[in-house]
Amino acid sequence: MKNSSFFLSLGGFILMLTALSCVKDSEEDRQLVAAEIESVIEKLHKSFFEFEVLGGPESQIFQIENSGMNGIYGLTRDTDNLGDDDQNLFDCIQNTNPSVFQLLRLQTATNSFSDCRAAVTPVYIEEVAAAISIKEQLRVELFAQFYAGQISAEEVELQLATLKSEIKSEVLEIKNKYSAEFRNCLNIYIRDINSAINRDQWVIFKDCV
Image (cartoon, rainbow, N blue to C red; front, side):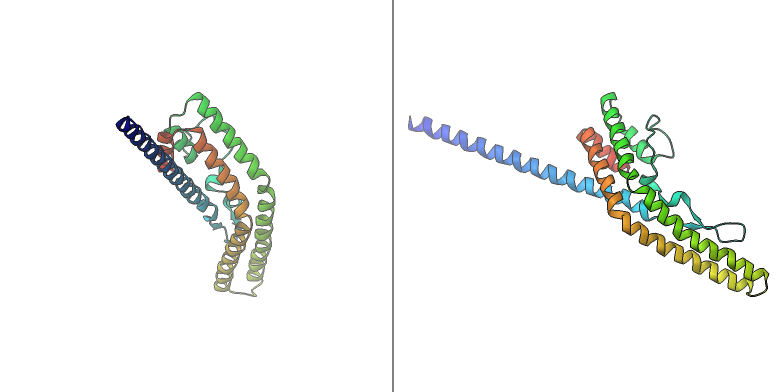
């Protein structure tokens, strides 16, 4: 009887260790996935700060393509064609070969992402447009002064470069102002994508982004 009790106790101890090991492995997996999600979010969010100020010459007004809503923030609700070469994130989703059910969840997540951005995008674009408009007026005045013989071509070029630099700085300030709100939308979106696909699909998606 004592031996039986011993083996029963030993068996229970082994089962307990196994259970604890599974809990530990599960926690480590959760931490790994959390870190991967954060890495994907950070990588995609960087695109928000990547933009160029276009224009400057007499016939080219100052502008920023798509108001700087490029990269992940330039995505539309249209997920019917996930193979569109201009939509790299959708290409990455397509690479996971999602099922019809998964695709529906991914489309819902994309629509939610668009709705989330819609709450902040108009005011962001308005502020960017206002900043550019002020510099555009100064650009027009520069050329008026040039043709009036008040400043030289060299001075025009120098001041145009200064105006473009000022636009970039001011738009960066605006982007930093709204960065957290846009990033929160992206955070929800990437987590929704992660929950819609399995682990193997997530690895494919993560490595593709």
